[in-house]
Length: 330
Image 1 (cartoon, rainbow, N blue to C red):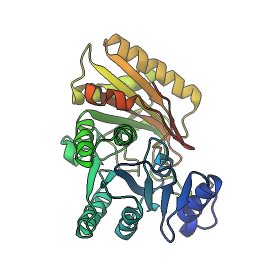
Image 2: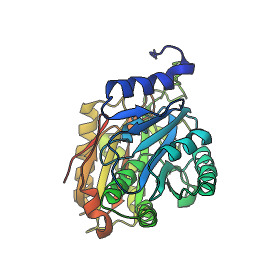
Image 3: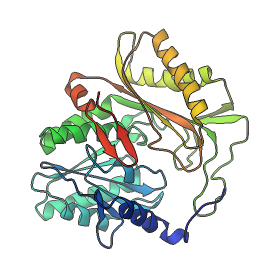
């Protein structure tokens, strides 16, 4: 697959420049760092996100109104540097603390934990939430990868921050969200390595893989391409089991199509999903559909369920906006 760039070694820098230059009233760069800062900062706890590039619009599109105040990037599929994270924390208003949100991957966790200790030595209080929603990656939640569920966690916690919750209250709410969140995915065509344009792994035509990592890690099962109804059944059943969702339970649904999945396919899958949930008598509080955590060039989708609780229902309802992310007010 052809890739457009001025050289892979400067691709992330060019991406950040292009984004901030196109929306100069919304964003600015932190000089010398792969960091985007939102100009519309509100009072209260600051929220920082970070990740390697390669799954856009995560994380650059997650900075904005009702979203994060800043994001720090690493190179493609590489954790952001600890030094950049620390400089971003210093640059943000931090009188009421800084909440760092990342997905549960070893490099991200290691660097955010290190920076938290360094920031505390400077008198800056920080706390971390590591989203671990991928049901296919491990049985124990603490060992699971974090994938598209970070979308919901960030959206809800940003609304809670805007409502005035303290840093400790946000951490408590984030932990509750993570316990009630689960995501499953299926890959229908291969992703591509950005640097080479070559397929990142072998996935023959006519086959799909369930639970493949967003960076190409091996999934849990490869099967022949099924009908949409069968694919949805296989994706959703582990989510119902993991979250103990039964008839009468209420959930929010986030459908995250990968970018090689067409709108035609997306809508067919959505129809199958809604019919499945109706057949199980599961209440749907909201269905949110947007490609916000894709893997480069791949086909397929992920489905995230959030089991609804009263403590975050109103925060979920709030609107969020960036040029790459829009969640309507309910």
